[in-house]
Length: 220
Image 1 (cartoon, helix red, strand yellow):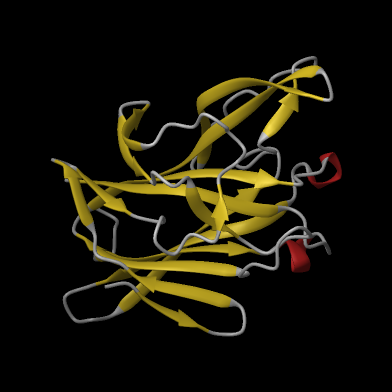
Image 2 (cartoon, rainbow, N blue to C red; image 1 turned 90 degrees about the vertical axis):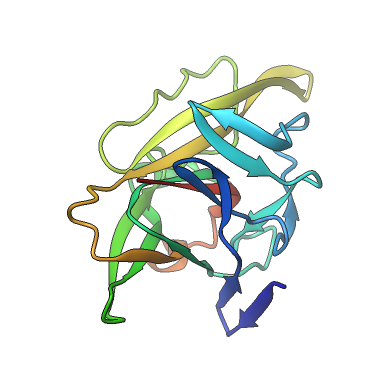
């Protein structure tokens, strides 16, 4: 049973970790979903693989969207889980209203919580940067395609769908936010994943909102 805990700005979901296949674990976002993933109209559902990473996508196309001008959502979404010796976190992440003026600016964070054998907690924080690790879910086909970013974390395009808007061809995207971990440096079991929308503080705007469609953890 999923037990949501609501505070003024944060949604925390205690969800069981689901073994996907050897070496991977799903963290589901479907049950606490608050928005339809309508960015990709024919988006894949169920068990899929992107860049050789398995995901379990909701059949109802539900996902989580953070606070924005079109939706009064949570500023932070957290998932509790237990994964031993994690080596990478993969998050299907896109944005809504990622305006050009925000390019290169921090609009969110991914906070990973680890717990060691003595029940001590430690966190590692990774930035979500507009135009680099998160982008608008669609673009006019006449625009220069945004290349996959490099470094750690990075953004990798995993799915593209041709569409039309106002009679003009566009492309809709699903991207994967990748955080790679050195297992020798990981301070314990992964026990929490929190995705924060910091745009109010960092760019002075409710835009952009962050849209989360799936999470997979790779482990030894």
